Image 1: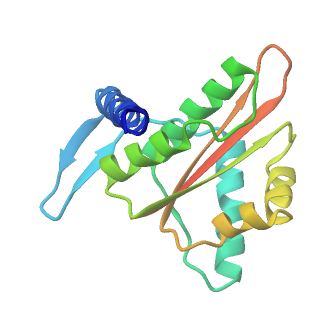
Image 2 (image 1 turned 60 degrees about the vertical axis):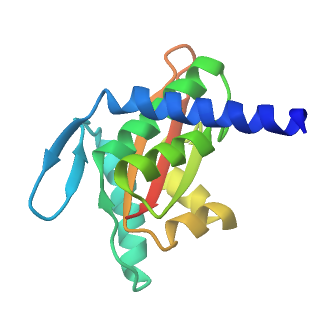
Length: 167
């Protein structure tokens, strides 16, 4: 019994600590219909182009275009920085990241695509479309998305994180 309680307690502490730290970076804006979270995020052209490719494909399939949310791009950037710092390509900490997004944005579900070492938005988009699991996120039942593309200055390789959310 004791061995089952510790991992659950540890997860609760980690989720709480991550959610608490992340909210310090937010400005809460209230309007009469809902509360939204706003954070500044400056998009580079390749991020915008990748988002346009995803939305163009979704619309061509009769799906809704996704609305970008800076907070999702900010969380994507955090993950890219983590991957660069750890010299790894992974979905590590996705549960914590998605729970934070659920708490902050009141998302109903969250998905994530990552990629490494593609030189153009078209190349990463094509790779995601050729992967059933990544394509599933692109055409999934989502309403919003964010993206970050960051280069590892040590080796010039690009890291991609694309987070999807249904809000």
